[in-house]
Image (cartoon, rainbow, N blue to C red; front, side):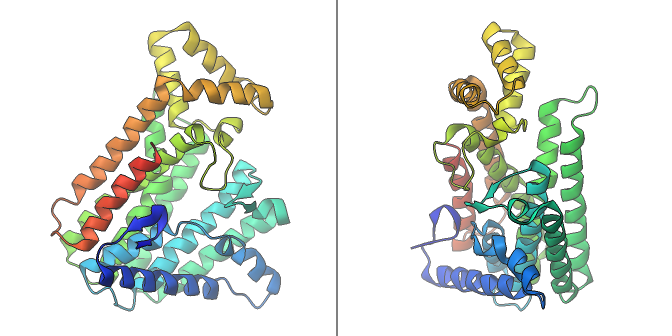
Length: 335
């Protein structure tokens, strides 16, 4: 039997039933939290909820809650909070990236324009805050700190690396904020709301931070390497939009270090207008065959292994086995 993203196999039937019941309750909570007295707001706010998605963060909440009381009243609402926050950032991201498609459907900005998309994201943040208020001041503080890191990561990405800063280090910092922070909070909330021991909460938070970065790096690799992108995006989307993901940064690093003519030529191709289909296809093919892609895969594996190592202090149980399996699944996605 499988649950969650990547067909995570859960050998223990009781654990699987718990996780599945939790995710079903989260889905209901998401639809409830995105309802408004104004039908148009409901339609816009539920647009991405109904489009589906991996529900990666709620899954982590449910698995982390197994280290305490998984039926504690705060577990499902906290999972709704992290997914609402994630969805809100997608509305904003699509405006910033001028993306046309998200999860296989028209993005909100394509359908209703940038203003509605931004305001819908704000509406989702507001709803997440209302749910958080019922979970207590500590939960509000944890979420606020994560949200600050998330926004900081987004700003750092927009600003680019400062003079003399290694672009790869800068990028990994960006991912820690943009992706790692919320995945870490998913694990933290699950453990915290279930009443798990403080040391367990810390271990799971460290795990989530590293897994989140690995997850995003796997996406970077997939954007170059996959033929049909599982997230509903076309392969090479980041490339076409000039978004410097890790394979591209590794290429530029190598070109600067070794000065090989073919590396420099590929960098020049990437700097050209990749909205041209033929040029885009040439760049994609060249990157797929380039050692920089393999280097980015190794970086992904390194973060996934760090996530795995972070779990070492936890007792052996089915929930821990499932979390370890997620590390393998992330690596598998990256090939």
